[in-house]
Length: 68
Image 1 (tube, helix red, strand yellow):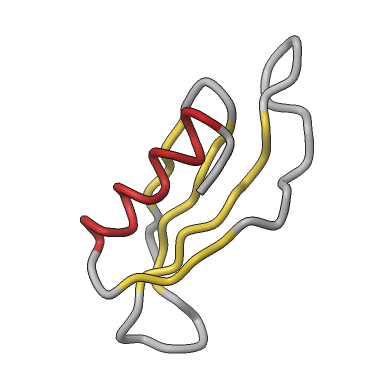
Image 2: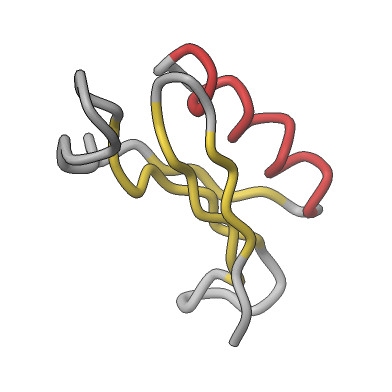
């Protein structure tokens, strides 16, 4: 199944179907940026949304600013 990646100044965020509930969209941190590239592990941040648009809006905050 396809997933969408948001790549921001602070983190990479995945947006994909929620494996636990097919009605929801899962948004989760896939890794943070370090001094060179995205080699810092994911922080464990995630959330679930009813729509892809809501997931993207939430994910943008984490990708750009490192918070959700």
